[in-house]
Image (tube, rainbow, N blue to C red; front, side, top):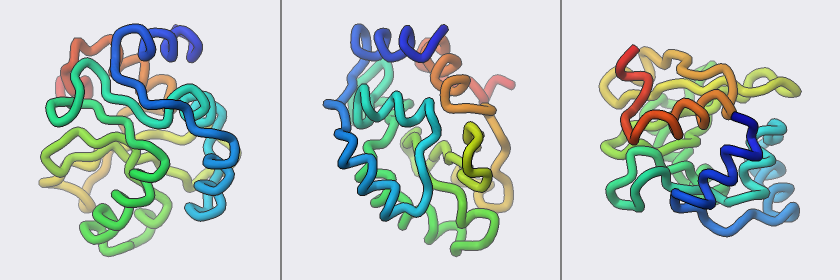
Length: 152
């Protein structure tokens, strides 16, 4: 599926929030210290966060708004004690129960991989579950509301 098809699917059958403005994205990037890659930029220009399949508080996939990324980063940093390479990891998806999907921003200019930050193993372990946000989104949308990487 293309990013455009996935974004249309989110608008049609899920729970998107209103889009972020270019100014909100620029402010986020300046404050966070990293730039959204092309897929994340397309997503946030389409919707500034979304829940897939079910609304909160029951969503397994709550893609955070730009403001929520900043707020939840403090929570994740508390768990990882800010240790490298975790300093380049930011929460992107809240899977509830203190479980997050992180975006690894350590390689600027390339698509960012996504990591599983399972509350019982993070920060000792954070395994890659998708090479890009687009791959993650496609697998999440086809998961039937199951956490797709738990079955691997």
